[in-house]
Length: 104
Image 1 (cartoon, rainbow, N blue to C red):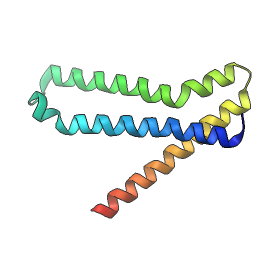
Image 2: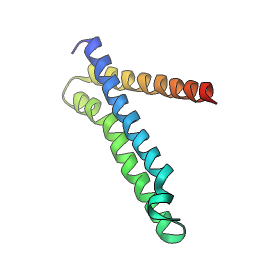
Image 3: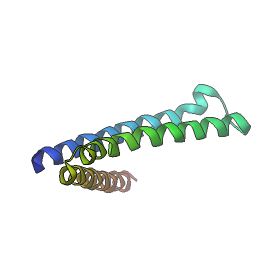
C-alpha cells in the first residue's frame, strides 16, 4: 500500500473518531434534557458504560486495521498507518482547540 493511501486511510479513521466524539458530546450536552438528572448509582453506571463503549469504538477505529496489517505480514505498512492516524488525530485536536479559542 502506498504512503498516500495509508495517509488517506489514517485520515478516514481519524474523521470517524471525530464524528463519534461529536455525537457523544451532543448526547452528553443534551442528556439532562432528555433523561432528567442522572445522579447516584444509575448515573455512574451509565457514565461507565458510555466510557466502555467509547473506548471500544475509538480503539477499534485507531488500532484494528494497523494490528491486522501487522499480523498479516505488512508490519511496515501497519506501523505507518498507526502513525499516520495518530498524526491526523493530533492535528485535528489542535485544529479543534484553535477553533474553540477563536470562537471564545
